[in-house]
Image (cartoon, rainbow, N blue to C red; front, side, top):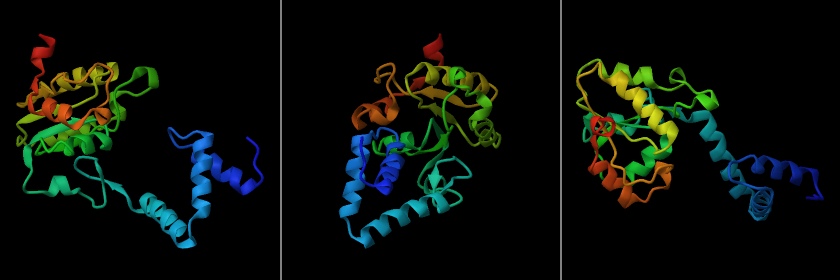
Length: 204
């Protein structure tokens, strides 16, 4: 792709580094920004700067938050005896959109994947175990993607959770194998949460 401007090429290269953005899409986005007013572009860049400088992760569940502890973890309306374990923030958002779950969350920050060099120590698994030590949690819902990595992580967590007096559930398999939670429609995902089953049934 030939560029008439070095600055234009640099901007397109940066946008092209974003996931799912090819060169043509990156060029279209950059040209769109060039047509905007200086105030609109400044507002756009300022929001990105704030995101990097001020965003933090909840000290309790590790969801993205503006505060030290997120609104879900501090809400008295949530069921703090039930923790839904998910891969990342996108899954929290997907489940929240179903309006079918009123418990709290724990974000692992990924899935166990030996092929990618991701082991249990790379995830927030020890922090989850710490949350269980006070004895207040009654149920852990393992809401992880129906993939090989998701199933591996679920099995590992189940073995760790056997040391605690908690019920371990998984979401119902209304989700096809290989499917990721963020792409599942809200009705199917909501039904999968509502009709969750004890994990023992899946391995018995």
